[in-house]
Image 1 (tube, rainbow, N blue to C red):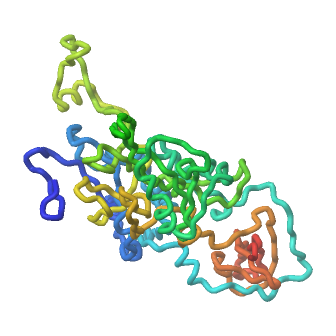
Image 2: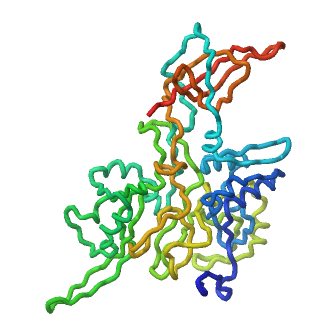
Image 3: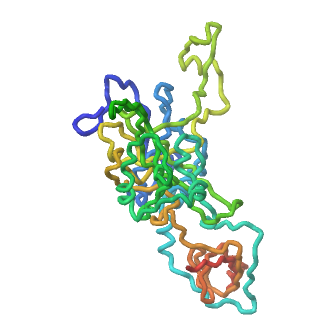
Length: 439
């Protein structure tokens, strides 16, 4: 309930709560559980990542207080690998010192100085070929969120729709201009007219986002005009962002490699007008130990305590998995344009008032297809089918994560091979590279 401008739990009606912890907190607890000390200062100092909330939740009535029950059955290694992909970062494991640190990949690579290969061996000419093996460079692959089956996913991720509706787009320089031109559609009588924006795809250039006008509720409207009574439905519409969570497309080929992010935006949707938008959860049915008796009937099953049911069912081989991915939202304790409605975590970085009067940019983004933010940008476009081999002379093995300057061109490195004998490392090294596509 809302009290003096802030929300409080109604202790008279609320008998128990389910926990929704922050992603940062649970990651630290996992580190503690395996006996490692975490240094996540670089994560914590960035607001848009610090307040990411894990929305996976199980009903309090199921009596499963251990939060691990609401997480997928991933190993610790899998958890950190999938989290790296979502955060765009890297966890560094010091197994000897039992420490784990985190850094954002783009910041790490930006700090690396280019490596200039001066002594390329001339008699070993550059071998350039179309390689049949797939390039493992992550930025040469399409990056997508794992598909979800909830009702809002069709709006969250729909690259196919954006591609197919290019001839029905109405473009605006800014979201402010778009709102001003279309705010009359906040209410709609259900009529369709030729070239009406109600049936168009709207685009705002300043936020690089597409929108559709989506009817979310309706009420019966009665009007009396010139002695006649008109009865019709009046629809309440929302300016709905679409494809905010579409893929980062590096290759338009249908058979292009893609990598799935399994930390996905939570399901936020409209309810009744008095409640507004809320968080929806989609998890598998209760799958803990239950037993039935001869007292059962179809309408009134014989109820038993969870303790007795667990004992009667015997030892299970594995625990039930209620979520196969982690749903996340952003929540710093405040909400935009909520008013008296229930609070909810944000997933979209654009918050539009219900009456279309205003909008705000939330201080985060889970988008991977936004050309205007670093999170979705590809640092280096490469020619993935042009594998180039150079042999060169060096006293030390260069940093393979640097950009390499070779004969006036820039490359990224797949690997460098060195030969070691009892006399030490050979100065003749061999590197496999891919050329960077220059703008």
